[in-house]
Length: 100
Image 1: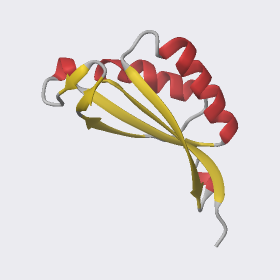
Image 2 (image 1 turned 180 degrees about the vertical axis):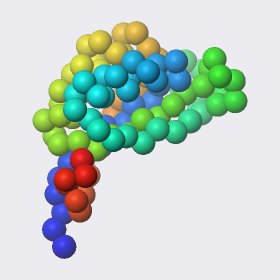
Image 3 (image 1 turned 90 degrees about the vertical axis):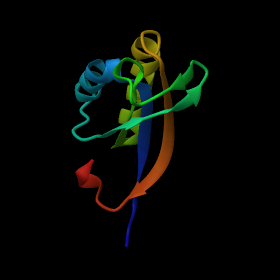
Image 4 (image 1 turned 120 degrees about the vertical axis):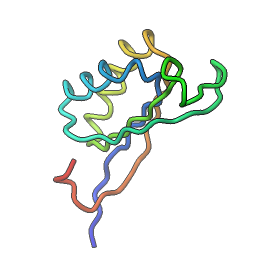
C-alpha cells in the first residue's frame, strides 16, 4: 500500500466567518472540506456552541503542500486580522491523492 504526503489545514474560527472562509478555500481550488461546530476556551475566553452569536466552527481541508502554503499565507494576511481564529497545519499521508 502506497501513501502520498499531503497537508491538513485546520481553521477554528467564529461561526460568523463561515462564508468568507469557504469562499477563500474555493478561491484556492479546494473542492472538499469537513466542517463541524466546536466549543472551548482560549485567549478570547469561553466559546459555547449553543449560543449562535458566540459559536465556533472547525474547518479541515487536505491539500497538496503548495496549496497549503498559499492558503495559509492568504489566511494570515487577509483572514486572521478580521476574525477570531486559529490555523494549524499537519503533515498527513493519504491513500487516494486524486480525492484531494
